[in-house]
Length: 310
Image (cartoon, rainbow, N blue to C red; front, side):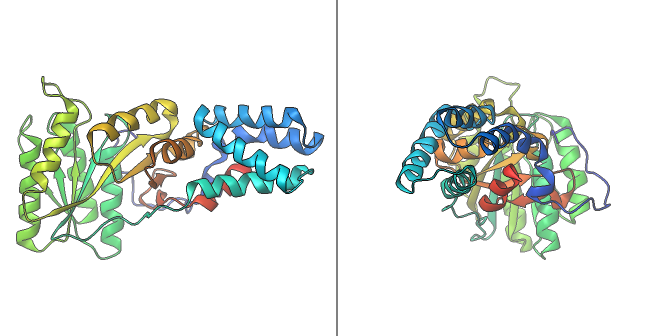
């Protein structure tokens, strides 16, 4: 689901759910489950759980914090059976992922959603799918082709705009991305469209620093009639800790409101969800579970955790 991918066909695939799309991530925990069920709870159990979480790219810090909480609760409740331990583990994981507002902000005239991230993670495709989803719910959108440094990005976004019944605002190749986003906001305001979704570059072919450019887009977008209600960082889940490193970098320079994890269905590194939220305090709002429009879904902590174990 990289940025180079064109929209797929209109045919609906199997309805996306965490359970039927996370088989790869589930495999990371299968060894631990088989071992603990056959042997019971002992010192080796904790070592194997630690290994499984780190292999899933939950991160060393997140893993240590989770295990500390789990050991304390297991001791307090005198947990001895593997079944009880797994129930506690799932509850602890879900609890660590809950408590965030996952709604996408729409208070604005228009509301503006900026999408940031490095090239190839699926920003343009994510915008297209969200535009189609909003259209299905009756909300029109203007798409801003702010990635003016990659010619194919505007063409691809245009295909998605056609599919979603959205309008596209684009500039000349190499044009100032901020001006394209500003024009899109002005156009949406003038025509009564309530939402602008703006693509941004993931790499610049000039001397301009990427983070400075993103900050400029945010500033300029706030000067028009619209309100920036979301700054969504798009990460490829299969990159694991590399994706977390990207998140840290963008967090330092952009006012992120949430994360979109693409390609979660094909990744063994589902623990990146925990790492992002625990270490950065940024909610994972949307996840990609496949190629179709309906496969971009709102993150659900309980469904996600259950899907990792069964």
